[in-house]
Image (cartoon, rainbow, N blue to C red; front, side):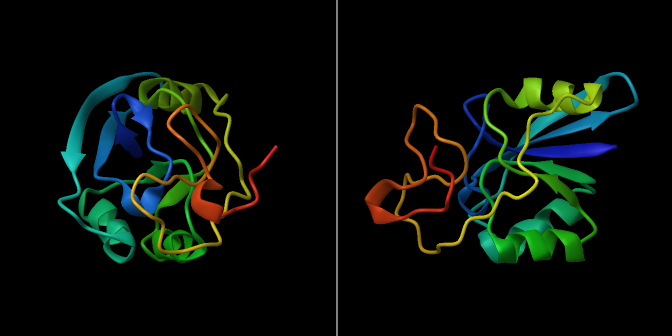
Length: 139
């Protein structure tokens, strides 16, 4: 199985459509066989699902993800777990152990984020709700 994680500095990047890197893991039932960081080379919302399909990804782990991107992933046959935060490596291990903390209803309702904005769970680098945008994840 091949898993991609939206990736930045070792952590799950919080906005799928703005990710500049994925960390891709090849796993079997009980271990990570290999992993690599790949650049998206500026591919945006519309093409990221195709990028992942071309990389033979089976599952995406990410932070915030909009409805259009969710549909594109489903059309490409890629499963996803959104609303995930923290270490990318730990997220993959948690998925393998059946303990991944994710939000099955994650959705980002707004478009045209300014640079540096995020959508998903709040974290130390800023979160959803900056600059007047909201996606319903306020606690």
